[in-house]
Length: 190
Image 1 (cartoon, rainbow, N blue to C red):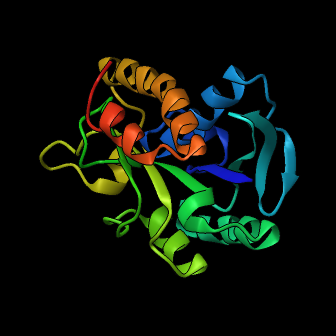
Image 2: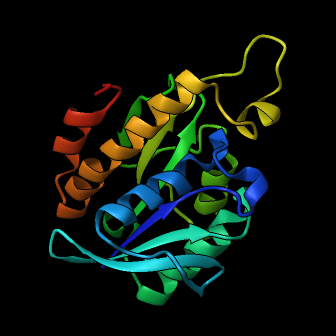
């Protein structure tokens, strides 16, 4: 059993914003596996898939970014999964250029409030992450405004491409091939 969670904010006004990169990646993965993310439960929208022979729950928390841990923690406890091996979280990352990806086995929140909430609520920093580059704010721009806005057209195209690469990266992580996923996908475009 794998819990594959994409982070974002619910509601139309946040659609396609940088902070919703996790939601969009989950949508692309779901479409690839012909899964609908239309069930409601554990403070989230979700769907169930069979990926690489494993049962995978695709989760989009509906708690807003800063409280993502409330939903993720409910999934972890309900299925009694080991976060270090059976929880994968996809989020945006302002420290990476648009279209880049970084996979990690564990680590701090790096200033990301959604990851901070998950770490606090599940009680560990040890869970797999796929961080998607959305770029940093322009000089004089504030961080909150940056992540809650839609990216420029050229950056949007790079994000669409990295969402597609999440399919292969997630499959490798689900198979337990973490080092291979890091070697193939970390900070490489295309």
